[in-house]
Amino acid sequence: MKGGVVATTRRRETARARTVAGALLAGVLAMFLLTLSYGDFQISLPDVVRSLLGQTTPAGVDYVMHDLRLPRASVAALAGLAFGLAGAIFQQLLRNPLASPDVIGVSQGATTAGIVTVLVLGLDGGLVAAAALTGALLTALTIYALSWRKGVGGYRFILVGIGIGTVLTSITSYILTRSDVKIAAEAMIWLTGSVNGRTWPQIVPLAVALLILLPLALILGRVLTGMQLGDDLATAFGVRVQGSRFALLIVAVCLAGMATSAAGPIAFVAFMSGPIAARLVGGGRPVLLQAALVGALLVLVSDFIGSHLLGSRQFPVGVVTGVIGAPYLLWLLATANRSGRGG
Image 1 (cartoon, helix red, strand yellow):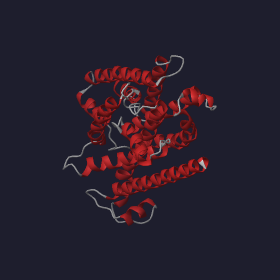
Image 2 (cartoon, helix red, strand yellow):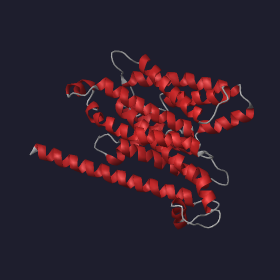
Image 3 (cartoon, one colour):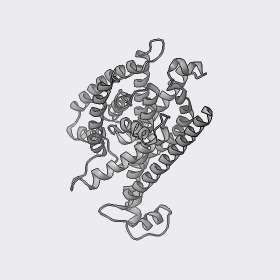
Image 4 (cartoon, one colour):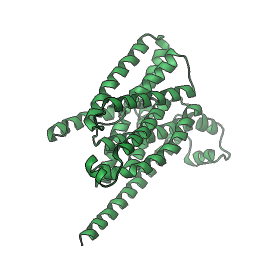
């Protein structure tokens, strides 16, 4: 009887998780098409579809679609997927909503490496993506090593990460103050998080990384259900806790590093996506796919708001996500302290 109740509950949770994933995917596709269609040069949805399929369209449509709007919408969706998935992996591995790459220093590592590559070494293109990925990996490995005490504890990892992130932010600020004013201003837009003016050479590496890392994360993420019971119980059930944790952290770091190299460190997307997905699904199960879709939807909606709904001036997507995410961070800290979960 008890086993039947458990099985019924699991089936309901699975059905709800699939329904939420389907609804989020529909929302992402709708916002993607709206981004392609809406703007100073209006394009009807049938013409959007014809242009995507390579069919004949009115004059100007193909240029606006393929040179301006499609790269922007693509990098917004892909970066959102990567940030959302990376944040959910960190938060569920460390069992703490504060543990997202933009809070614990991983995104700052990618940012500092990217700034050094562009402003100090004078390089660009694919080398920036490689440098950002390397910076994120080195930062994560440093945090992992410094927080190791016969294993990696969640709060120790977060506190070490916040300290490392502060140091990296200071290095980035110092480099900006020593750079040419015009170049530093352009770098500041990237640091804010922007999907405007992105080109396919910047987007393709992120797309390839997601093709590899997204299925890998979903496969490795199957152990998260057992790891949510705690390290001792998970080990008793046969989960290789430290090995699985390290592998998932590397995947999450690669996702955050590649997304940062393509769109800059878009604030709070990784931080908000996991908790939003968990509330939508409920039940306490891992929500990696749903968190990735929430991230894509957040970036697409925020970019649309910053581009079209805040007056005549366009704002980088990171400004909008920052306005949304900062109050959420304050609310989370306040409620965590009241409930004794603040550490």
